[in-house]
Length: 447
Ligand code: ADP
Ligand code: MG
Image 1 (spheres, protein in one colour):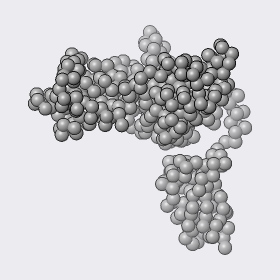
Image 2 (image 1 turned 60 degrees about the vertical axis):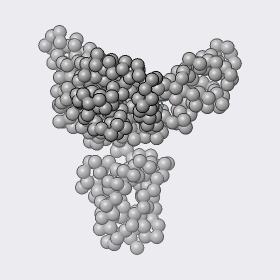
Image 3 (image 1 turned 90 degrees about the vertical axis):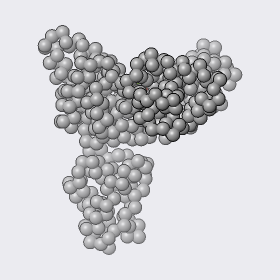
Image 4 (image 1 turned 180 degrees about the horizontal axis):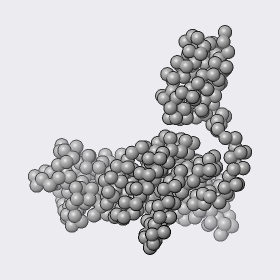
């Protein structure tokens, strides 16, 4: 019988030559595992890689392998976590090149990496997408937008992409910046022609552009214009662009439509708050990193109660650990409860995952209306009430300002929004049917 190990070697080489880059990236990660009852068993280092390979390349692999073997060969994919991703350049060469070009990508903060990011159900899609981008900059998922509430790891992932590329592709020029610094730098550059052209050259000559917190660009018209051109130039020459934002693109106000359209191209991934088990894993990792010793039941208490975001979780750990250092003894559960009073406020009702779109959708379906009725101008009594309720819920459940909500409701002004909010507040306690509507819609949204 043919030797399937060498059949695979030949097939892999052939596939790498012929498949498009989007498929090739998965082939590179496959290892030959064994031959079993005439079947070819191939392995990948994670579930994510296995799924992506099966989905994207199974047919190509089967065809090529069968053709080379001269018979139909059945293929199994398994996960072998001990297998590291096959990298093209050996690590040593990469490190050597790095020292030669050491001070190049100085905008990156080295403390963030994929290795110290704990991924759970809330973040695995974003995490895996970011890794794929880092491994193949400019080829898959371009541009990519990571969005989510504060303290959920957007900056951590963005910087990790930069650090990974800097380590593995040291020749690549990477810029990490925040939308705020980009804006300030742009404004400064307006002072002279030379500065403008060096600003443009700086941002248009990178291989990887990472911009954090693009919601900051709202209302900054000329900066948006500048970014639009930078974006197009990089995008057209297949340079990688990754952005973060505190909300989905559809909810950005005061950003030109053409820029929003650019941001929405490619891949948009969201980060959700971590579940309890993930919070425990993160807390343990942070304690290890920072050298905190924490009793298991104290740690569990913190993770059960601090459930807003990872930044708060870190804050709680730091508070308790500093307390322990100050008093010179370990933190007990009672001390933890006392010290964390300020952290563990009543569960926040404002939920960064609830969007105005979701509120309008739920309200429309509760009242059996169309979403455009609610956004529109109709004076029909039932529609007006539903509209007031949507606006009231948006002010209660999201962190948007009244004028931002107005913009998302087809350009209503601040006073109209305030009127709706006050209107519902004034009848909420006396009108049973309004109360019922508000509570039912709210419960559905918070679920
Ligand atoms: P954001 O940019 O979304 O506001 P950050 O990336 O600044 O949030 O994260 C806040 C803090 O929490 C950082 O110290 C970051 O390292 C940490 N953090 C967030 N998510 C994770 C995670 N999944 N694993 C480990 N640390 C995390
Ligand atoms: Mg951030």
